[in-house]
Length: 334
Image (cartoon, rainbow, N blue to C red; front, side, top):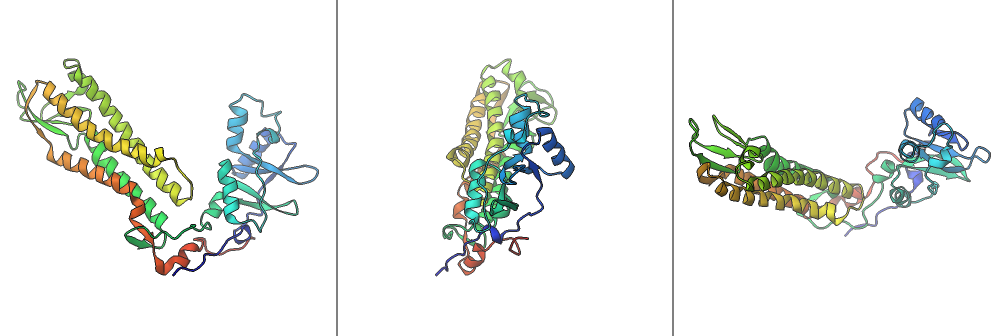
């Protein structure tokens, strides 16, 4: 039986009450100079007369809204490039504060009291205070923080998949097929990798083969597609699992489709290479590289494990209250 999880508010966070401000009549150049001087990426924009919070100016806003548009930063006011976000109070729920920053894709929200600035909190401040809406009861292994465990599990699986299925064939460590060469002296066997084939005394680039056998142009193109799919699939898995850990939603394309393409491209790579081996008359007695096949199967298995990471870990029922508490030690504003 689980107990009710506590709510957390901005007052439970460590509020940065020394955060720098800039007047609304300041220019972009002045804001940039202040950011450089203080080594910070954001400034809270304050109305010069009323001292009311108007918004936040970030270095990214300067680049995107001023520099990229060719505007003169020496004359443009900070209010032109700042983003407007509804400030929070100390009594605002951390979930509400998080959603305000997430919806605008920004890092900082001002904290006010009676329209006066108390400080700011960042999206990183609130991450650890956001409780899961439901206890994660799906999974085989009980842990205190399933999303954290799933992130590391998926990242490790994606890394192994990329290395075993894509990097090793690329660098010529493990091949796909073996072929007995014809009319090549001092060469007993050729090993076919992702973009080339070589043995103890002989090297063939697939570009050279494509000049004689047109189908190998398809082999080259698909090998490049396979490599790109492997890299994109790796980053897709890591990004989506990290987003789950940080309570961000990701699209089905990032979560499932791109990693699935990673699997499909590797399978098709085997098929296309097999066809190419039959087309190219320079070899005979073609055989599958057993180690390469095993590693490709393992790579696909790791990708599948990463895709189904939600079914690996579950919330430890003995520590459900601990899991609902913030990971940051200490609470309360300055």
